[in-house]
Amino acid sequence: MNASGILGYLPEHADIMASWGLSAVVSKTFTKEPRAGHSPPIVVKVRCYSLLNSVGLANPGISGIGPFVERARRYGVPVVVSVGGKSCSEYVEVAEVAERCGASAVELNLGCPNVEQGGLEVGRDPVQVLKVVKDVSSVVKIPVIVKLGISDRLVDSAAKAMEGGAKALTLINTVRGTSIDVYSFKPILSNISGGLSGASIHPIAVWAVYSVFKEVPADIIGVGGVITWRDAAELILAGAKAVQVGTAIVYRGPKVVKSIVKGLRLWVRKVGAKSVTELSGAAHRV
Image (cartoon, rainbow, N blue to C red):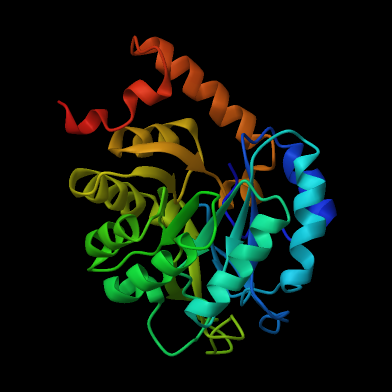
């Protein structure tokens, strides 16, 4: 599937993403109120197939969920709505709207480093993770997926997410970083810092999936630096049952999705497995 943030809040975005050959379409993060996001420049390419972005969760608010979901459902694949908020009640409200509009699942964005809402991301605090997930899970019937960023309490937060009623975890979100123009002496992004994605964070994502899988019974969606099928295979061996692709689409184009799937099919056959599911977490069994 695509990682949240690669297009995904206008109906026409659903048309584009569905053409990539995805098994599920994930929206950009929707919040209760419309957000304009940060002023340009908001994206900068950095070394190693990586990006720094500081979009600031730009989206049309909950009024945009219905049109996006309706269009995306035409393609016969699950539609996951990414949910953001400034409080537990806002997460609940946006998730309820997503369910009413026909979303297959919601993905709670608890680890975005691009938005300043009282300091640290919610996902860094296991107590807050439990509260948000529990509140949302208690009012919606569709699956609740929890997306977490990297932190020194990641395993604890993951455990609390599952305790709160999450059906799956998405690991990981982008990692905070910055880039400075060596001639102007100024940070390139208008917001100074942004979220680092792409190949640069892939080893971190593999470590996160491996660590959580080892300690927490959970279905995991691996994301972070999937540029080739080998990157996806690493996340699967670490414990992921599904994989999201983001920055690779920017660098290699939408055909990268089908290329990754083709590579995974060949890999599964070559190692003598019957399916990707059979290989999920295999690195823990050797």
